[in-house]
Amino acid sequence: MDSGLYAAYTGLMARTQALDTAANNVANAGTNGYRAQRDYFRSIFAGGLDRDSPADSQVGQSVNGFGILGGNRLDLGQGQLAATGNPLDLALQGQGFFALQTKTGLSYTRDGAFSRSSTGVLQTSQGEPVLDRNQQPITIPTGSIHVAGDGSISVSTPDGSMIVGQVGVFDFADKSALIAEGTNRFSAGDAKPIVANASIEQGSIEGANEDAIHGTMQLVLVQRQAEMMQKALSVFNNDFDKTATEELPRV
Image (tube, rainbow, N blue to C red; front, side, top):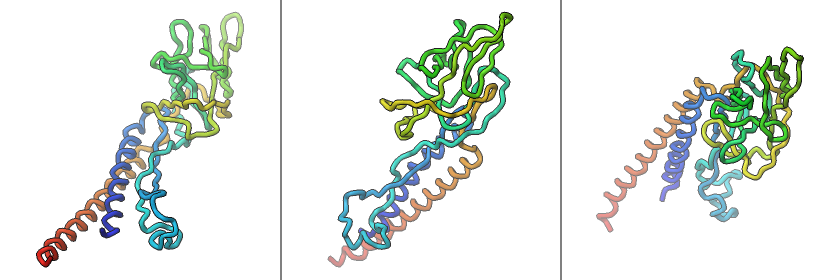
């Protein structure tokens, strides 16, 4: 079978899958702490061909190694910060994640839209405790709250000021251990978190690291590429039909 058909087919597969990724990125461009997904590619015949094959040795690249979408990788680039004025809204500058205690275990996020529960526990909008450096919940008494760049929380009361805890910010030596859960949550399996050097900015929220305009442009580009591959595939199919119609009667 003509190798061009394989190229068109695998190209269409890759672009169709990439469309889902691009659409998801655009849909979450307004989600706090969202980390965009980026596509990477691999060969459809990876490990399946003789590397010494003449068909596999032109300019160091395989003419039969048709690229398909290998999967998605997290883009851990910085998102834009937006000031809110809420003293319990916290944004991260640099690499790292807040740790949360959820019903299913530890979870990590860049969404720092926090609040104080009725019992004084620092929590997410879903009521999940935000953890300190020792991975313990943080209790904040009533008073004026100040959060320093290193996460130290101090509360001013009529009796004076006192430090009541330190928000934990964690990172991972192997970023590939992070698995997206939902829109802005991540799990890390058995990977051990390390203390991150990110700085905390009080009264701000970090947005997604996907720009809606550029994301939309990427979506349109991928869609057009998919349409081109579909047209190319149709051309090859029509050529095969024509060949079959002309040649089979002679057999």
